[in-house]
Length: 311
Image (cartoon, one colour):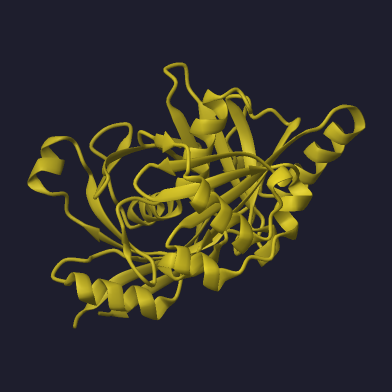
């Protein structure tokens, strides 16, 4: 064991301690996979990450650092809130990117990260999507307590992690879910649910007012957002198969959801998704699609704990 720099970051929060916490070990060299997994199980956060020098191949492709990502139960090839939180920690510790964009190497490949003001955003990895089998859909619907008419659309979304994504009929349906987590764990399938609501007139003003209240942060720390404030997207993520019953705010799921929903014309190219309501959080995920069609997934990060760990 040795003393290693450590930070705990809150990611995607509208204010400190309202997002998704992340444990970051800033020097993961010499640690085995089993040691990393054991520490991730001990922190009991949805994800724990370890920063490493880029591989020879990664460095030649422009990677600034390499990242390994663990839930309490398994290693992930890619995840969104660990990507932003780890980048925040790396920069906070004095990391200097090789170019204007930061490049993270992980098992899913190279992930580009850009800065706008103090907000970071990652380029959503390429998405593979397909129609789920009816048997799987029925099994998951039963575990969530959903009726067939409450499901508007369903897709298997794969951008490293694989999510069964369900588009539900209303925000109320999303927030009222009380899943059977044991059944979800037995299924082996991570599940994301979302609902889109479009506000008009007075309800649009109320929606914008509510969002601004949730996002109360000193103005100088915020980057401008071109999101359509008439669109409300509510998201929940259930990941019992990897040891997380409900993830507070999920970057990988929001990335693949955005690629699906924007491509199929169900949302505009810029919106803000809310997540974490049912677990006492106020997560905000800023989605934008640039002129090339690339979807960017952004959010605010703040360092909540900084020190060292004996590992």
